[in-house]
Every structure is written in structure tokens, then in C-alpha cells.
Length: 344
Image (spheres, rainbow, N blue to C red):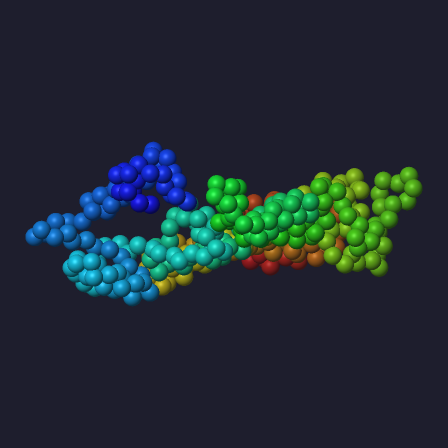
């Protein structure tokens, strides 16, 4: 933008510079504010300005090239590489790309990792879209979100358009839509309706009966049997399945976060954080919630067809682990709890 020529001649600007005088002045004022704000951060020493800046190692050649350009413009900058002072806090620099930009922004909303700490955004790039699919697993809505993400990926953004606004998170939206489709297929959920792509299911309804008959030789190949959506206890079965799957993934996700804290403490040699934060947290997580995940899987693998009344409550057993020192108050888990009762 030739601002000087515009002020002196008053002739209209051409091409992209065809802006109103108000926009030109706003651009000029914003640029001056940035310049003076930067200059105010320097210190004056013997009629020269001295400033301390952080530069990534990979950008040192570009800094030296800038020094050569300033010398060619009759400026004489002095760039000195020095050791980092112990009292200074080294800033964190992450070189994002189009894929890692969105998860890094999500992590930075809570806290920016310190210098040389493990960056959880690398895991968030996959775990966040997957957990989104676990919560909102639906073939219909997932397909719409997936197609919208593909549209943002391949569309040409124009200035001020919705595509330009949402373009930084387009890959994130694609993955969220993909995992929503995948989990919707696992749930066999299409706008809360089942699909029969893989057959009618292993349960058959006789005319006039509300209880289905189970074919003991049948194993449904993939996802939830659609016959459950026609049963009288549909809500209890489907919600219980989704809740238990979400608990397993949630505990695994939190355990990963605790391990990242432990690796950071081990890398920096912080013994207090390692032994008095990481170790108690991982022990309690595995002992309580990890054991709860184990009971969920064990209950899935145990056949209570002969007597469903002895099937224990996972929540009650988990509470008994902490309140009764492992002694259960519900029947049905004698093989699992018997060694603990003998010890007490």
C-alpha cells in the first residue's frame, strides 16, 4: 500500500489497495501501534536500543540474513548469541501445521506446556475426535459432519466467507465426523433407529410376543444386534452399553494424562512430583477405576442367564472397594472377591 502517494496525490488506489481513506488510516495506526509497542520493550543504553529476544535454533539463518539486509540499508545492528539466564523462563514454541493447529488451540485454552514438557496436543489430535464419536455416535449426523469437513477441505476459501473462518479446523471436523460414523456403526444407530444391513439379528419375535427368542447358534458379525431396539428394555440395554464403553475409554484417557505427568516429572528430575503426585494418582486410578473397568469386562464375559438376580451392580462394588475395604455387600462375585475375604 503506497500510503505516502495516496496522501500526497489523493488518487484512488488500484487492485487490492482500492480502500477508503478510513481503512488506510486504520491500517497505518495499527502498524504504528505495533512498532511503538515493540520499541517500548527495549532498553536505552548509550543512545542505542538493547533488547532480548528468543529465537528458535532453526530460524537462526533467517535472523542472520535479516542482519545482512539491515546492514545493506545503512543500519548497524549487533546480534549477540548468549546463554539463557537462570532466572528467565524459557517460552514454549510449537510449530503447528494444518493438522495440529486445532488440537493445540484446545490444549492452550487450559494451559500451555512448559519448555521441553510432553505436548498433549499430539494425543488430543486423535483422542478428542474419537471421544466425540463415542459421545455422539450416529450414522446420520456423523455423515453430515464428515461431508461438511470434506467440503471445507477441498473448497476454495474466499475472504470473509465461512470456509475461510472454519478452514483451520477442517481436518479436525473430518476426523470428528469419521469417528462419529464409526461409533454410530458400532452402536447401530441411525437417528435413534437401527439398521439391518447385516441381517435381521440373532433374536426373533414371534407373533404377539413381547420377548424375543434367542438363537444360541447365532453370533451377530458386527455392532449391536438390531433386535435390541425392538425390546421392552431397549433404553436400559443401549444406555448401559454406551455408559460402560465411555467409562472404559474415559479411564484410559485419564490414565494416559497421569503417565504424561509422570514422564515430565521423571525428565526434569522432580522427585517430589513423581513420588508424591504421580505414584499416588496412578495407584488410586488403577486400583479403583481400573478395577471398575476390569469388573465391567468380566461381567460382560460372565453368563448370568441361569440366574440374572445374582448379577452384581458395578457401581455398588466400586463403592464397596473404598467404603468397605474391598468386602462386597452384593452376591455374584465370589470367585473374584473370595481371596480378599480370606485375607480379612
